[in-house]
Image (cartoon, rainbow, N blue to C red; front, side):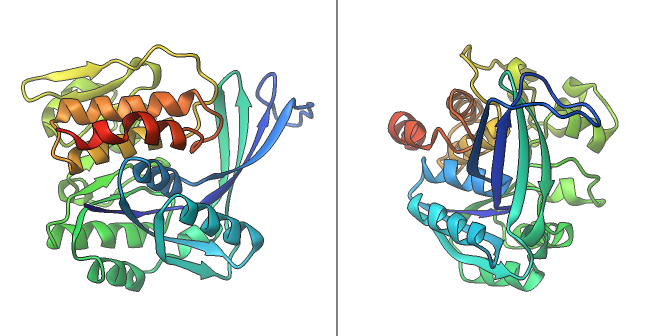
Length: 294
């Protein structure tokens, strides 16, 4: 089955510190790495670890980072035919890593230059898409247009509303699944009563809650699927990996419970590796066949 991702592509510059920086502070770090990232790319790469055909609509700059990103995505067997090169810089994320936790500054660059015409071409030339995943690190007008067009074409769409932003009226009604974290949920709904929200949307809303797990509607009630006990190396990309695993489960006709559990397994492997895409090989070797069998 062909799965689509519309989203961001970033270069992640990751540095480790003993504690998070305060305003005006200079502190020596213990490690520095340049990794591939961007919420769209993270989700596409981890989906590709579980699926044979993932096609990506995105944008990079006309710089060396853009070339590196395209080469990397091709190596992960992702169709990059719909990734355009813009005049702006390739997206950049600067990540502080402290004891496995992180804070992130993002310079979106080319990511916010995706146009509606590119969305049309992507959908018109991939009419056999079984599912589309998107986020909010790109042009929000184009995201809204994508959601509208997928609804009209009866293509299920998963929206990961990150980074947190207010959505236009009616957007939530048009998506098949909405997967925010706790902070994003509070911004979207003005409430921390997650159980009531999950009950209200009955199967559409899933809330990721970090080490506590994922809250979702099991057909009768709001329930929490627990996270796996593990030794955390880096939480960067854990939410993206959950989305990738969940999307694969849904695309392969698994139950909600099975899709959530697959998402948690992918996220757990990600947390045990450095970088948002560092668990690609493990996911491919350990979970690929299980993701397909149902």
